[in-house]
Image 1 (tube, helix red, strand yellow):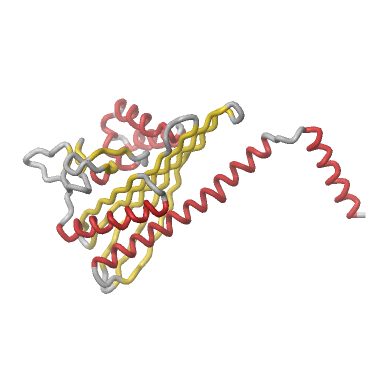
Image 2: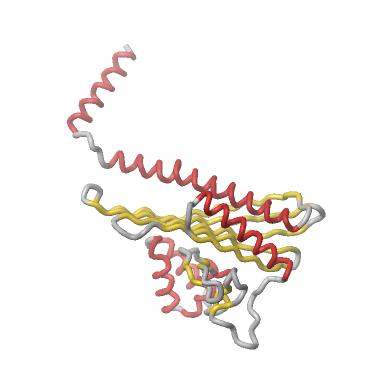
Length: 268
C-alpha cells in the first residue's frame, strides 16, 4: 500500500459530503482494494445494525467487533457468520468479557435516560497491561420530510497501575440532519467531531473500571453536545441569519440608519 494513496483517500473523504461517507468509502475500496483494511480502521462512518441470530436482539457493527466479513455479537459472544474451524476471532478473556457485559447493561440504562430509545453496544478486548473497549450509541429518526441521526463512538484504553488506572478516551460524534419543505427548501446539516482526554482514576476492583469509564463517556458526551449546540449550531444560525433576513430590506436599512444616528448623537 502506498502512503500517498492512503493520504489521498483520506483527503478525498474529508471533502465529500459526510452523510455519504459509507458509500464513498465502499467506492474507494473497490478502486484500491489494498487500502481496504487501513481505511476501515481509520475512517469513522455511521454505525450499521444487525440482529443477533441467537438472541434476536439488535447490535451495532464496527471495526472493533469485526473479523473479516464476520461480526461478534455482544449478546451471544459469537461471530456471525461463523468463523472457520482454524479461526478463533478476537474474543475477550473471561474477566474482560464479564466487564463487557456489565458495561453493556450500564450503557443501556444511560441510553434510555438520555436518548429515550436507539441502539447501544459495548465491546472489550484484552491488552498486555490492561484492556480496551468501545462504547457505541446510535439514535435515528424515522425517514420522511425531516430525518436525522446521531452516532457516538467512544474508544478507550485502561492501563492498570498500583491502585489506579490510566484511561485514554477518544470520542467521535457523527451527526446528520436533513429537512425539506416548501417554506425551508432543502437543508442538509451533517458532520463529525472528535475529542480526546486522558485521566488517572482510583481503582478498587473491576467494578471501578465500569464506573470510571461510564463517567468519562457521560461527561464527554455532555461536553460535545453543548459544543455542537452552542458553537456549531449557533454559528450556523448566525450565518444563515446574516445571509437571509425575514425583515424587508428597506426596514432593515431604516433601523440600521436610526441606530447609527443614535450612536452619532451620543458622540457629540
